[in-house]
Amino acid sequence: MVLLLISITVLHLSALAMLLISTLEKAWWIWDDSEISDLWYNCFQDNVTKTWLCAATNENDWLQSVQALMVLSVVFSSISFLVFLGQLFAMSKGGLFYFTGFCQAFAGFTDFAACLIFTFHRKEILADTRDLSKGRFGYCFILAWVCVPLLLLSGVMYVHLRKKQ
Image (cartoon, rainbow, N blue to C red; front, side, top):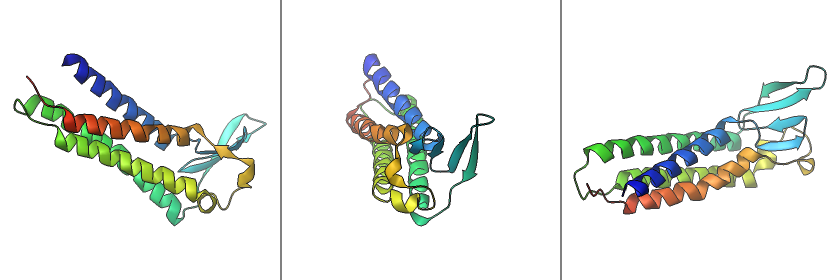
């Protein structure tokens, strides 16, 4: 039982860390080594000083929905972990972690929706920038996609987890 709790906790914390990185880092779309975009900024590398110069992205409805869904995903996953810790110590023997599992699954669904919106509407989201055919998805976008099955898996595991002690 202890090994199962440690495994679920490690899975949850690693998914939460990847979710935070994918939400806050600057690599959702990469044109080349000198220009990147994320949910919050467009950055260019200054060749003279070798520093990144960042400006706020141009807001549109699609970008705001991706931003909101990613932040919601982080919030629900964090709430899920805190509720899990509370239930672990306060719940009576034989109880199930339904609320924790549903919060975690909802975090997975919001992350999934954000990734889908960015995938299908990247032209509208990145409209005022360079030609999209010269760019590619960045590692933060890939991390966000990797988080989807991890969040859903841990949500299902929480729903089936029963407190034994």
